[in-house]
Image (cartoon, rainbow, N blue to C red; front, top):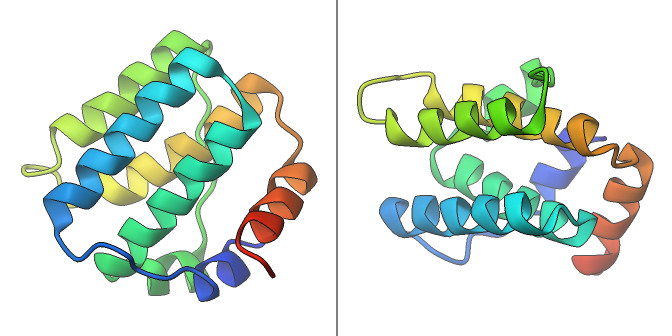
Length: 125
């Protein structure tokens, strides 16, 4: 996936950090329940919006993020929620969260090219 290009087309619709984090948390819960590529894409959009808001977009654009994959989906999501839960005491929480989130696509067997194509279609690009 071309994260750099996806970030460039991401618009911030919410300016309150806690509301953005809450929105991401709800999206991740929905993704865990539904295991659907459309929910994954919506969650990706929310995460990219949060990245831009938190000024992590530069780091993601130029250094990227490598997917982190646990041995099963339960552990993958436990680690994701651990990142969200410890964000106040972990300065790298967002980068860890984003890497784990990218790993979800591999855990669920989602096709990266389909994710990218649908992301751009949903965002009218």
